[in-house]
Image (cartoon, rainbow, N blue to C red):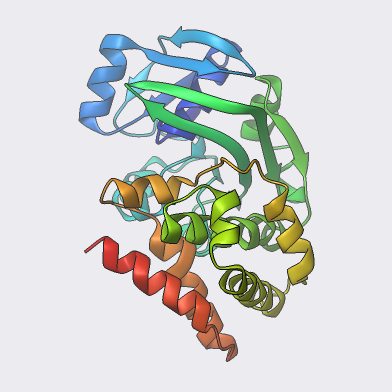
Length: 284
């Protein structure tokens, strides 16, 4: 059995796709969300996959021995971790932002592979709205043959293997952290956010690239800047949405952990510290 823990904007899309593909899948949610899903199903509107309502099984705890897709926000990990440990899953494909979660799950004795997903998905009026026409999953090489990986590929997700877990997580983290911090700090889409204070944006990109390189994933600021500028100018980040709503938000996973890693490596990151401090201040 497959279990999607955290059927929100991303997890909900994946759970609905797996169910539509005929997989034996259960959505694992908090009690209030579970009741709503049982009553109304999970409605999806997607530019890529179409529109439908998935009436899939729902639970508040992962079934024992399930293959798990973990799609909660980073700040929710402490709340779901005890139940995950109790369930003794066969595998945990973790789609959380940042890098610290993989070690947390591994220390808890779970068979984890930290993966990354590129998808523009959000909750609107109880529905999952998937925009952008893409849903790309990158897994470490040693998770390419996992049950969850094969099932997601069969459900229509574009899947590829991309090296070690560290490489997979940092390729997304180095890209996502500046995007999320700039859009949240300016409360603007990525295009205007990059141009609001060009020197500040360049400084942030350089600092994030330095930390990524120190962590063993060589990253050039120029390449990272080009990747950010290839994004649709109107794209906003989930961190931005959460900060605008007053939280909770993934500022620690997308900023705080970077500060701690920079300190560990002795890297000076004044721009990063400024943006993280300002975003934290808006959440108090």
